[in-house]
Length: 248
Image 1 (tube, rainbow, N blue to C red):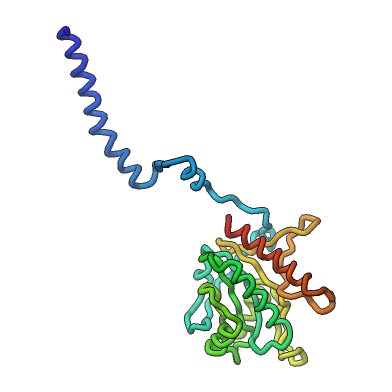
Image 2 (tube, rainbow, N blue to C red; image 1 turned 90 degrees about the horizontal axis):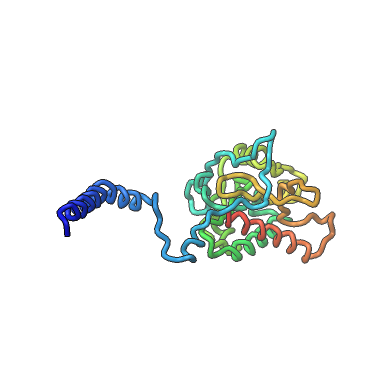
């Protein structure tokens, strides 16, 4: 072997040594900071796919997607709950009152069905706001939750300042609520549910004409004269759309 060949090997070895000193620490640093991800198999790579936006519409007000306004109330456990507690979660919103003699029991029976369907999802919840806060204290709400079988830790039945709740209902969610002496139980409300995505936006599916349905009926009105199957079908539609948002 010639002397020049020896010099060539020494030169190559020197270049490799310099590369290792300069670049290997940087590569290790990038891996530790998750800039580079090593996939062990094809299945690992498949599981790393980014989620996609579903076909559910964003509800728009004046051309802008409608987002849940900030709120802060007290739940059935006596804890302060705000809109931030629902960040990263898909949830259903209702306005009700515990002494409601008409639609509230059916609304909450339907919500219990939904709760049980998604019992294994930590990122699903329900927000129930009482429209009779003078009577519906945290203790009353706790008894009501126990009666119906509320078990989801992300299901908060909330009470607080009456005017703030009504503003949230009628302006924040556009879910009609009112104190009405001539109404059964002394209050009126729509009985509709709102569906909120993980980023706090109101969402819904579209109708046959491509328009958002906006809200989901917690129970059909008596005027529609539909049977129980019709009610269940409405709730099954809501379940389908909750699944879509959970997968986004």
